[in-house]
Length: 526
Image 1 (cartoon, rainbow, N blue to C red):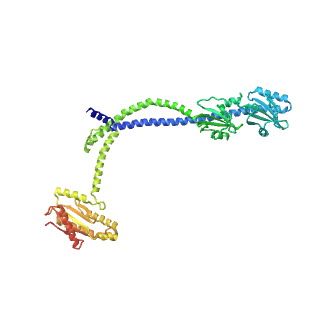
Image 2: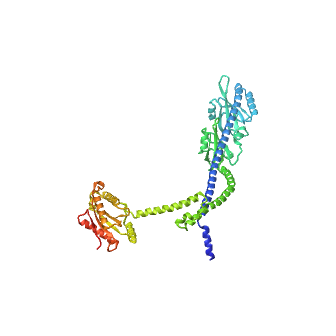
Image 3: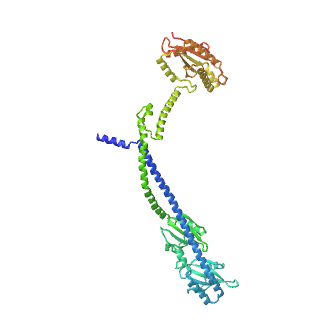
């Protein structure tokens, strides 16, 4: 017994009813809306974080490239001043060394300075290095022979240091090319350039690096990668083509990075500032967690309100559903459901109307079930019901059995479509010639019956003749004229059996056929 009670309780708890459905739907709506909002918020913030990081990296790379460009232009200006003084005393080594020493002491932009004559021979160096009297490489000589300020590509000095060398040409007062003065800048020495490009504040895994025109890494936070040649990197390809921008990419280590890049026009180098995407997503996760925690209390309040309001809304609906299962259709309007809000009142009204509509549909379907599809007259089923009702009410009637003469020849000569039109037209004539309470039906093919309550055999014969003449004088579809034979009988008769009455009408019909057709005959029970 206790087990049965427990099962009943469990069934009641887990039973799906209107209240539970409304509360479940409302709860799912709140939860799904919250999840959708959080997801949309996450996506928007993610895109915003990425765009902000890309913009920041591009801005940083651009500023770094601009500062480096300004530094190189400043170095170029310093060399220009010294080149003017050196060109006036190209043959005086003491004065040349004095000018180089002055330039070195006035700025820490250079690690060394050299003066090279037009043949490529080093004629002065400061500080003293074992390169005096040596010649520069033919590749470097070819570039300086352009006789304009340039920055030589990075090369390894005789002392084993990776360096670059800004140069400025020397011209005498007659404009004759004498050689050039060059400043040596160690890429990893304690110079302004190294401070600009090699020392940065790194946060969240972000870092910057510099590549030269040959895609070699000149500056990188990992010293092991300096001098490494990078390939298949779209950012490096773009920046060395002179482009400035930002994009998301996968670096050589297989990590997703957000990179900004800018070129240094004077050297053709590229500056790349990038940050791992994972660090942005980690930062976003922390921010999004705060959003979730902030929205949780308000969501709980909303859910509580949903349960209370949902219960109040569902109560009249549940009551209406319960009463619909227990009351008769005619008592729905007085079921006692409290329609305290508009929708429940409308639902109650709609239910009442739906019952009426259903009854009308059923009635219409019933009419279709009892109606001949072609002629819209009553069919055999309708005839059986009518005869049963007539037998119960004991109302007398006369019956006409009607058949179209030679109907098969019409189908053979004009086709079944025309034959169907003739049947429809004959049905219309029968209805037009019938009284309001007469019962017209088609029992098959070209055979019809007309039942006329409270009409004597003589009255029925008059009606039959009138209908026969009407049909014979009527022009049917496609210009056809037809005739009909009619058999007449009446009930009650001596046998008192309705089926015998119909059988006698049918015999009278065949008597009319044998007598030459297009005529009416009647038979009465003996």
